Length: 314
Image (cartoon, rainbow, N blue to C red; front, top):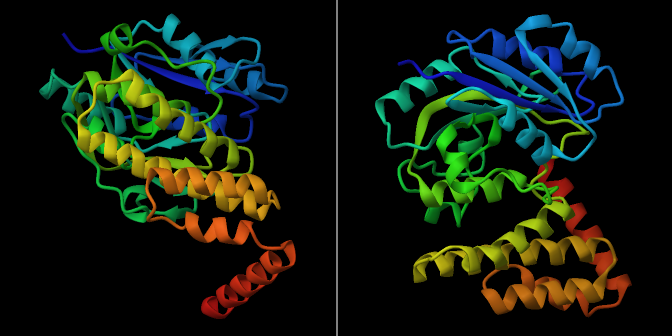
C-alpha cells in the first residue's frame, strides 16, 4: 500500500512568503495527501492567504506558542503515515517528495530521510547553491547520531519522518525557542537509521525575520545547553563524548567573542574559561586575554581587525 503524506507548515506572520511556499508544495510531482497550515497567532494577512487556497489545505489557528508548539499541533491532527516538515518561508523543488518517498519505500528500516538545500534571498536569488558545500558539511546516512555531535547537517524543511518515529522519540520540545530541530533530530538519529536523498530539494530563505540564524546569542546559548544535556540523555562512546566536548568548547568560544563585542568583558572571560576547560585549542584564549584588557585596547584591536578585513576585501 502506498504511504500517505501529511505536510506540516507552522506559520507566524508568514504573509510575504506563504503563498509561494504552498504553491511549491502543491506543485510536487507526487502531491501530498494533506497539507496542514498551523497559524501560530499571526497578526498579518497569514489567515487570508492560507484560506485563499481553499480545500487544497487544512487551516488551523492557535494562540502563539512557538514553532515547536505549532508543529506538534499539526502532527497531532495529521492522518499521514509520513510527516513532511516545511517552514512557511521555504520553497520545495518539484521532485522533493517523490524522491524522498521512493527512498523510504526502498529502505523500510529508515525512520527519516533528508537532503541538502540551497540558501536564497527574499526573491529566491541563490546565495549558497549547496548548504553542505558552503559549510564543509559531510552528510551521512544510516546510523549517524555520532556524526551530528560534530556538525548539524539536518534541516527541518528537508525532512520526511515516519509516523512511528514520533511514537518512539516524542514530538518537538515546546519549551525550546531556538534551534528546536536539533534536539528532535538528535533523538531520531539515536534511535533510527536515516536516509539521504542526493542533491538539493529545498530553497531556504534568509531574511530579516526568520529564526534560523545559527550564531545569534539565544541560539548559541541553547546549543551549549543542549550539548551539556546530551551525555545525560544518551549512552555514548568515549569518542562521541570527546567530540561533544570539542563542540562545547567551540560554542563557548563563540559566546566569549559575542560577549566581548557587546562590551561584557567579565562574562566574556567566563565563557572563554569554560571553553578552555572543555578543549583548549580554540580562539577562547585570545578572547580571555582581550577580556582582561581595558576597553580602549579592545576597541583598537577591533578597529585594526576591521581595517585588515577591508583591505583584504579590496
